[in-house]
Length: 184
Image (cartoon, rainbow, N blue to C red; front, side, top):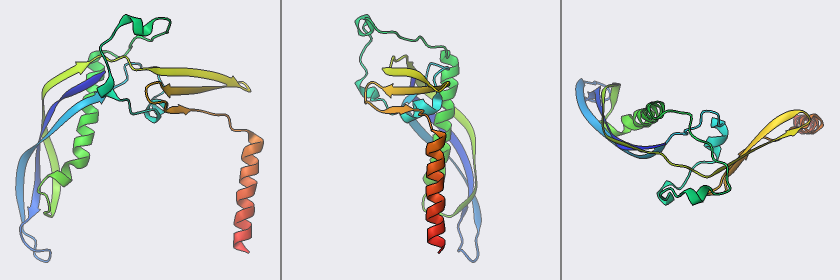
């Protein structure tokens, strides 16, 4: 799912109108707007979110209208996250992004304190259901399951790999030897 729209946030804070030695705090209020475009939310609950984050981004501006021939001979998974739940996740992402940057946008260049946000007003929200090309695989090594994910649009790869006990012991011994050498 991808979401577009506008978020309006009310804010309030105190701004220093005096000096740093003799501050005079004055209350200020206002609105900030966040236009968001192509906020991506996975429609599959069963995909490993950590691996999925590592294969981002997708080039969403290059997405084309669906044609059934695109899936000929391929296996495609249908979404299992409802539009309503995806919309809630997208809204959470937009609000987090807005709040992270709000302090820099409000009363720019002035010393401020006690910044709070109030009501949220969403407008012009639209969505698209997009099928994105991801290759998903898994393999078993010494009884342990490992997963791999590839962004078939950009070629970015993420996955898990086995860590051999002997390899880990060798690395640990090498680090300890270097620390011992550095201590001498």
